Image (cartoon, rainbow, N blue to C red; front, top):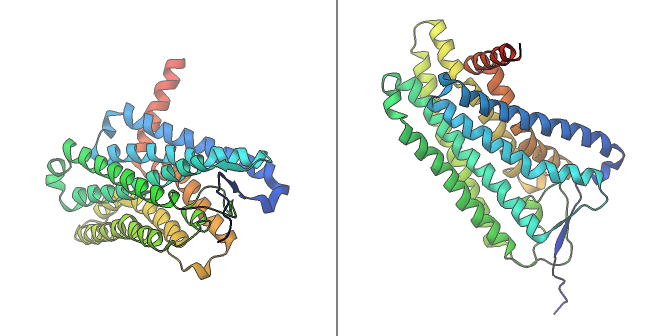
Length: 311
């Protein structure tokens, strides 16, 4: 029998191997956080104000913007505080809460992107029945299903991990309570938890990706049947923003969580985790603002309205 010390707090190493640039990193990530918050709030306001954007696609996009706003707020404030502080600890309870919300918003976003793919499939492959297929009730069911699935899966993952015994080292070699980094600190057999994580990843990542892939195969097939080049461009432009976000989100998630552990370098893990947890929420409002004519038009109208009121 060996003595076991119960872990009451964790130490987030973050970027401690680059302490000489902590101030620069703080300024960069503070800028990223401010732009992320302002960009997603602006997108939410524009969609809410402009009646032309009160459509199923932008209803789902409004949920995505709210998710990104919350998602970035789970990670960045603590990371910013740690960059300026010598005390980089996080309590056991705070770590569990951070992981829950990280998984909750991340998993919900995966399901929501799948719902958005179904919306684009309905709009392009069944344009005459689109309003009947994507009615208000269906939109609410898709979003509610995404949020509920995200909640249940995040609760299951977090509770199964944090009910295991922790002892010895409490050092997390990352800038947040990532599930893989915390799993390494568990004492005892983690086989069933790893199986549960794999099943969750298969259900929340690979199944949505498969459904999105099937949707876009049908979408591309329908677009190629359009005779005019202008019609094809217009049809593709309505789903190009969503496709860009899916590629960025799925690519970074697969590289971070689906690669063999033997190929991992801790520096690479941090970079990909940073892009997945911070970069996506930062880029989403920019992608939808610059690639969507409707959003750009709504932004111009809102800006002109504000300028007229000031005069």
